[in-house]
Amino acid sequence: MSKKMEYDRKEYDVTRTMPGNWYLSSYKFRYSLDHLQPWFKKLKEKKLVGTQCRSCNTVFFPPRLVCGYCLVKPDLWVDVRETAQVATFNITYEKNPQTGEVVEKPVVCVRHDGTDTAFLAQLSPEINFRETYVGMPLKVKWRDEPEGNIGDLEYYEPLEDEAKDLRKEE
Amino acid sequence: MDKVGIVGYYYMKMSPDLIYGRYNLIFETVRGALDSVNLKKKDITTVISATNDYYDGRTISNAYCVEPAGAYLADESKAEMDGAFAAQYGLMRILSGNHKLAVVWGGSTPSCYPYDSAQLYQTDPTFERPIALVNNITAGGFQMRAYMEKYGVSAEDIAKVAVKNRKNAAKNPLANPEAQNANITVDDVLKSDILSDPVTELMYAAPCDGLAAILLAPEKQALKITDEPVWIKGVGSNQDPYYLGDRDLSECKSMEMAAKMAFDGAGITAKDVDFAEIFEQYAHEELILAEAIGLAEKGKANELNSEINGDIPINPSGGAIAGHAPFATGLMRIIEAVKQLQGKADGYQVKDPKVAIATGQIGFCAQNNILYVLEKGGN
Image 1 (tube, rainbow over the protein chains, first blue to last red):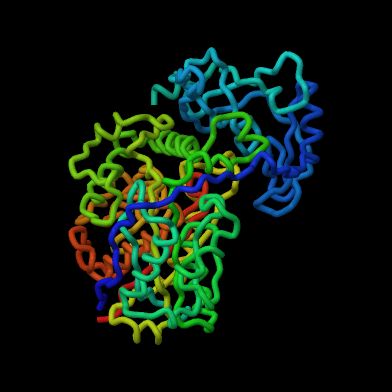
Image 2 (cartoon, helix red, strand yellow):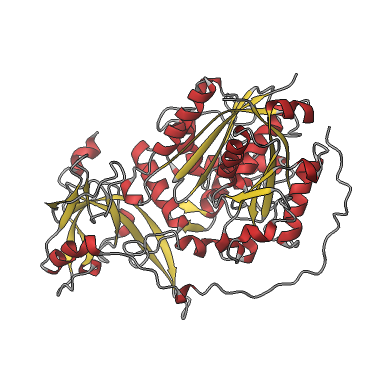
């Protein structure tokens, strides 16, 4: 059925490259943080809160503007514990552009106990990240003087995993 | 659903760095699809493009593609998603009854722009971008770790998928030469450079240059054009939440829903499928998606015999690992499925297939998924 293509398909030896830039830094996007203000206020007091959807009871931490499951605003503020678990993690390699030195860094998704969503966070530099595992219990290490932004959750420290030896027996 | 046929297709040999300009590539692809069934420009009534402004380096980038894509004085629209989603758009245009031939083309040339840096701009500006090192590859690392730990699947099992796909790619003459390797071993995959532990370089479908085009036509027209059309029996698409933390990364809920929708539409089940062409960004995604589609039980996809002559061949063409040309990969999966159904896959032909599935995806960790059920037509 198919006929062979007849037009010339010889290589184009000379192509031109044109430099181009996409000036993203000139963009001024507006991103509303209104729904996060109570959260930031509490962070400054070293307290954790999340929002719960009144329709499906999902607890969002960090708070979200919209619950995607129900298409309503989750507006019930609830208390959130300082303890968390590793939801998933990987190890990335960060290269210092000046020295060329490569640093191994774990990137973890943590899920606070009693919440339904996970978010990206830093692990304590003291943890040997080769020993990290999914379900590892963690606790928040606060910044010494909280400023009311996400940087106040400086990193996560390990907690004693009381059930670890029991799991090994299985 | 009225029958809509895939009547023609074309995609060029992928390459890490094509020397052609984009204008030439688009022309060659669309003209190639028309020539495969001896059609002319005047037969085209609608054109759907799948490109991305950011990757093309210009705004409303499809405006530039009017002439080479055959959209001159025809109606044209663009899906800024994977080509498989553009095909769904084309399908809907045909089903509207107003069109007799739809050209769906997609593709891009990552040799011209930093693909992985561009992916950074998909992340959330408040919680993800400033805190951690996140792009598509890190997200793939999350997904692989979650899958491995939940089901106890080892890195070797996942490396085997990469080995199978790269060996299949060696038989596929149109695959990216960098991905073709007939002598690759599991050890090679595990010992290649680590991109984001546990994902290694050879488990990742590295972006390469390439474009693809398919032609869609309603039943009557399709039978006039060709003796061996492939019918789209069912299609389903679905998407997961945007935030990675909202999802259970060890499974793919959206693909489950998409597959259910497509299978219900076609009136079949996953057991009736003869082979699958799955768009996998990483080796482990093939397992996760195969489980979501229902080809295997959860956590058991690595036990399937998915070789070309196996029980249920998956990616006989090599899949996206054989060459991932952003925005064309989903179309290439459809084209490879069509080739197999027509018995034209020289060297990697599955034995006598009747029903196939082809999937497309876009987003971190297969956020948006689409699945086509394709059936052999003609005699």
